[in-house]
Image (cartoon, rainbow, N blue to C red):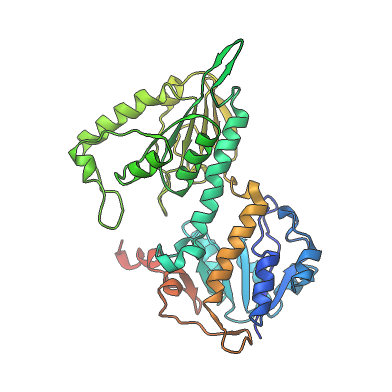
Length: 385
């Protein structure tokens, strides 16, 4: 019987937890022993009693939680020194943030743990239930609009009163991925006039399906700006200049802007320059979902809300975590669907049976037998890019 351990997060500002009572019950039904550190679910309003009722053992302290564990589940990447006591070669699955703190990542690999990065989940149909980035981005897109509307000093919907009409707020979403689409839907539900932009032509239909207006220079080059795999092509300098001029002019009239552009392993691209911020009306709000990677806005500061020439710029890096109850529930389901692949379910004895050739396993495996093995983390060695 394998033991699944869930220690409390080392970062006390991280309110999410990697297990829910629902997934604890499911793991137990597979024949696994589930152990969680006392108080680990407090930030998500999940009591120790709920975990016990679901069949998990609640123990005091990280050391007792990890002792002999075959699988360790966390939200954020733990320090290598924080995993002492886990079984030799134990599995660690978490939001690894694999492109930051390379020294810490190497130290984690050298412990001999088998490490999986949930961010590397392949974008294939059967892995959709394991897609951590999507589940958390969905909540972040929603919370970005809620935070912006709370900070914005006016109403979002148009209101017709005996004293006159209150105009609807204008909301601009930059980047139409999972977070962007949820932001569009949320802003529309709140009654705002919503526009959105993206470099991929296919997103126009998605934007319009949510009753928002798509903003882009739609010339022939734009129509051919997407590969067959759904990725954006590099645009010409002439097109970039025309698109920049259009966006610069559009930004001036917006009350709320939400930026969502992130590229794995790279600094966030700048979408809003300092001059563009300064062109906006006093009282306008920018919420930058890329703040953790430097931000899409030139004046963003991670985990700060600052005011620049009358415009508020919000750089909260824990938007999904602010909805910890929902975020933990979805994240725990992602992890369960992933770990379920590795468990032999023939007789429900809770034994590991890992298919190392499985595309999902290969795609997320970062470290094994003391070495980093993921090609995106080892490609730079030996002069390769």
